[in-house]
Image (cartoon, rainbow, N blue to C red; front, side, top):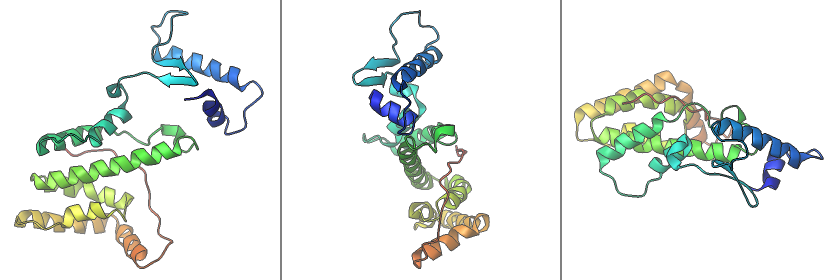
Length: 213
C-alpha cells in the first residue's frame, strides 16, 4: 500500500505537516509488535518496505480472514462432505466484527462489507450442504439468528423450505420456519414490507459466533 494512501486513511484526508515522519514512527512501532524477535537494524520480514510504500508478507494461512476467504472462494471441486467440513472450520475462524474497533473507519468499511458478504455466502453454502447430508437439526438451530440478521436474504429461508423426499427433513424445515418466526417476528414483517415496497425496512449486519458441528 502506498504511503500516500496510508497517510490519507490514517488522518482522514487531513494529514499534519509531518505526516510521513509520523507514519514511519507508527510502522516502526508496529514492526516491534509483530516481530519481537527481530534484531536491531535487521530488515523486516513481515511488514516490509516496498515501493510505493509498505506490504504485508505472510502466508495466507497465517491471517484468519485470508484463510477464511481461501476456503469459501475455493474453485476446485471438492467432495461434498469434505466441503461441508471445510466450511464449518472456516466459519469457526469468524470471531466478532471484521477489523474490530476500526470497523467503522472509512478505510475499513469496504473490506468489512466484503468479508461480511463472504461470510453470508459461506453460511448459505454450509446450510445447503448440511441439509443434503442429514444435518437439518443443526441448520434449524443456526438459521434463525441468520434470518434475524438478514431478513431479506432469500437463501437463508430457502434452505429451510426447499422440497425434500424425506418427511423428517420436511418437518424439520417447517419447525425451523416456525422457530424463525418466533425468534424474530420482525424478520418476517421486514421481508413482507420490503416486498410490498416499503423502503423503511432495515437490517442488521453484525456477525454471530458460529456454533454448528
